[in-house]
Length: 239
Image 1 (cartoon, rainbow, N blue to C red):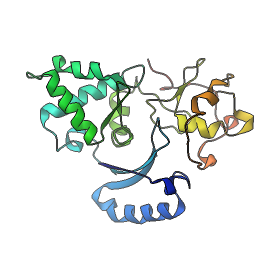
Image 2: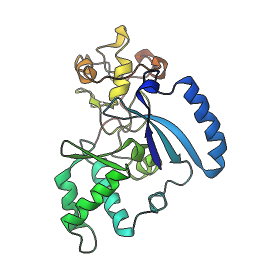
Image 3: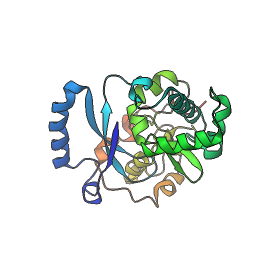
């Protein structure tokens, strides 16, 4: 529904500072009856954290996107499908614009370009380096729908147990992990080089997050490798 980026002062205190947690808790009690909830979520690529106002009951895409027309909704559903079923968790901007040929009606590339800009404006999609991605708002808000409709394609981060589109992939077991989860996981000296899923030596894990200025957070959110079973399980790698 909405995404607000945590400011720098708040972010340095962790994913959800105590005073903010209290404020969010109070607000959530008030809006619970409206089937709404504020959630704190970490962007998959950048160190940015967001406070998201999401619908907790009805994640049906046509009602979540009630402000958009049927044609616009069809475009987003097609983009969503292409991204979720892709091996990279994103699609090229060119491929996105070329979706006009697979959509009903006489939609042109100019039309799809305008729609892409519109969905980026409303923070459901974003473009970076010629690629189109789902925003953290889309992932959090549409998580039930994505898990239900794309079960065979969805990657689940084995560290936080949530959907992951972009991150670090183990070259042995192919498990995909959030970069921010890898950041927290590799902070412990005894687990720096081992994949949390298959225990394979992965020195590249450090390089993957070395230049990303993640803010300090609660390490207890990430369990130690010894507390989990070393198996990939459903959803650990794209088909």
